[in-house]
Amino acid sequence: MARTMTDDAFTEFVHAAWPGLYRTAYLMLGDHQLAEDLTQTALAKTYGSWRTVKDPAAAPAYARVVLANTAASWFRRRSWRNEQPTAQLPDAGVEHDPSTRTTVVDALATLPPRQRAVVVLRYYDDLSVRDVAHALGISEGTVKSQTSDALATLRDLLGEAVIPMTEGARHD
Image (tube, rainbow, N blue to C red; front, side):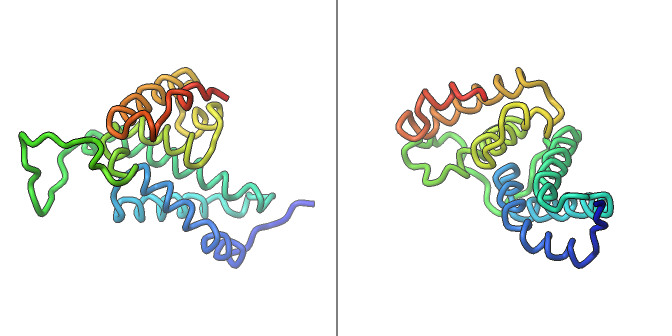
């Protein structure tokens, strides 16, 4: 039985899905305002296809794929790599001790956008290599290599105790 999804059903979906989508977006982007923009854009795109949704249980996964695809398109923009204005300039020449980093979010912010997206989707959203590849429009081999490179960087920043070597072997 084909079920037409209503605007009320979409409103309920947004209230339920927003927190998870926003957290994923924030971990990918490392900026609250950009994460809100990405989440809103992904939900707007999801709404555009809402009447074709036949299984409400599939809607969160669909919205997450839309979010990942939208983020990937943002990362490809030439302007994405431009410097962002900050209120305070960092003190150049001061080396930071990795043990002083207090959160994984700080470490994630040091990764290139695609590596950050792969790590967030793989380990935060617990998606398989195949699902991440599909969500980002890249090959499974690229997901594996980007994951390996990202985990090596995170190990350097956070230490082996936080990111053990065995984590990099997860290739499902």
